Length: 115
Image (cartoon, rainbow, N blue to C red; front, side):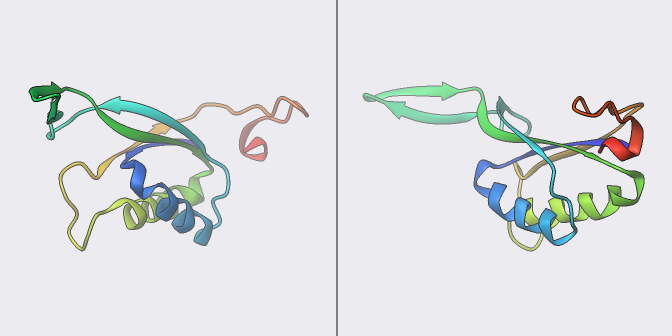
């Protein structure tokens, strides 16, 4: 079992959800988050004053999958989140983390069956 954490552009959320549905991944958690990477924030003007906004709005997806769904899930996120053919700076990141256990609260089931 793995926990896939993806940080993507908010505008790409619907495309990623559609791509995940195509590979039969239906369960995910979505969180709003702030951060920056190579973009190093944004510059904008507010009431005539230049301002530096250090954090950029992103969306974090958390998806717990069984091992056979890891690669299809990653490929679906890549397909839905990438801007254009080759992608652009700020498209996001995907982290794959080992998951020792999963417990369904309602039934007490554990492991792959609980996902």
